[in-house]
Image (cartoon, rainbow, N blue to C red; front, side, top):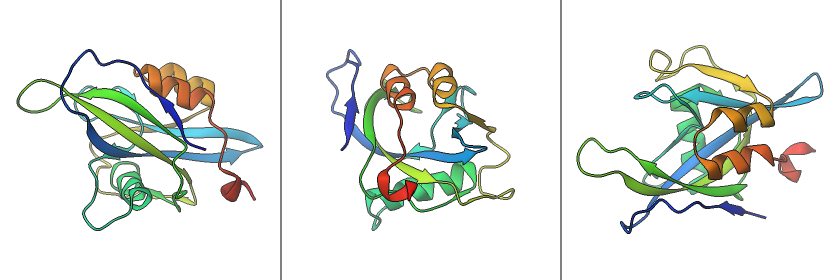
Length: 153
């Protein structure tokens, strides 16, 4: 079941849609979540981006996970949640974005991927990941993350 973690952005501008990837693994029995740094500010975020033409939302999330973090894995078709944030744009005021988040169990973490020179990546426990991100809705999603049933089997 999808959970929405929404916080008012304080703007009446129309919401734009993005797709995000909550990349996870178990290491030594411990659940870990992969975060990456944003290119502009260096803050910790999930891989996310605009919908890819011709791809389903889960496939768009997987494409972002590859491009931004070097993650290979299958995205769960049902989102694990949504959150709202303000996206800084090159021109104009920030735009409110609704991010639909799909869990991806990481099968492979590649050393060579498109944005490897622009971002850092690091594994965190769910509480640590929640403490590192700025968006309240994303904090709630990460703190309460439970891997999808189909991925856990």
